[in-house]
Length: 199
Image (cartoon, rainbow, N blue to C red; front, top):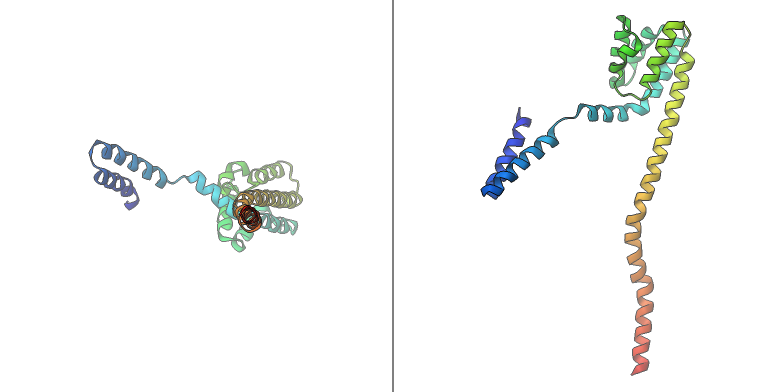
């Protein structure tokens, strides 16, 4: 409730502070801007959560594969892994397995996993396995390995971009210091020698 009042309060405060017609226009602008900034974007929140959970997700897939290699069906393996895994991933996996247990196919239950990386590939493998009866433990292990490779590649790309971004500030700090400490004394010495010889 208080969150909804912040926009109007910001608009009124801006109107009072500036005053006149300009203050009214600025007040409406402040109201709109604050309301837009405070509006929650579920998609953005989900993307951030998936980004945060991404590094742990391949280990969950490995645990699922290990349970399935031991002979457990997917839903039983998923419930067991969900109980022992990271709470956020476990909750998603629990809902996903619960939907499948109640009769949904993996593609229909996919929204329960959210935007976890490789979730669509997992659903496709489960649907194919349900149609053909093929064991998917090997497919889960391959998916986990693929996700780790993708995560490593993204991390290296970010590190490369960070290194490039640091070059600018480094140059801005280093070049003036080099000019002042390295070239400055030489130029001053030449100027002093020239003035002294002229006198």
